[in-house]
Every structure is written in C-alpha cells, then in structure tokens.
Image (cartoon, rainbow, N blue to C red; front, side):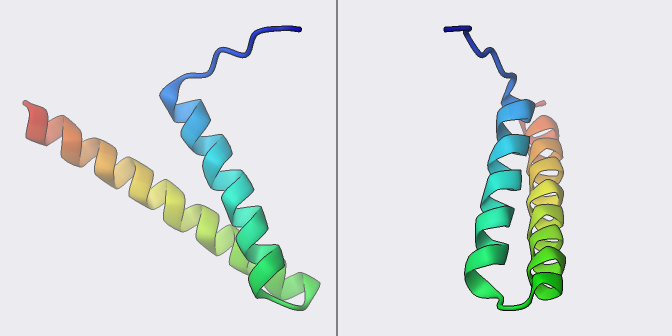
Length: 61
C-alpha cells in the first residue's frame, strides 16, 4: 500500500473539500443549492485557513 505524505496545507484543503461536500448534500435539497452552498462553505474554510495562518505568522514573530 503506498504511503500518503501530505503537507498541513494539503490536509486542510482535503478536509475543507470533503466537509463542504457533506454540508452541501446534508443541508440543502436541490442540486443547484447544494453546489452553491458547498462552494460557499469551501470558500469560508479557505478564508479561515489563510486568515488564521497569517494571524499565527504575525503573532509568532
């Protein structure tokens, strides 16, 4: 079995993607609503990821 070696960013990206897919499917009924909400949630995760990353960068010195 091949070993998967992901960086922290890649792991966070996969988490955001799969979580957004699940949120979209579970919370909305129509296909169009599911896609739009999934993209919205994915965008929010990415915004939070970059925002917290910069906050930690500047806070750590």
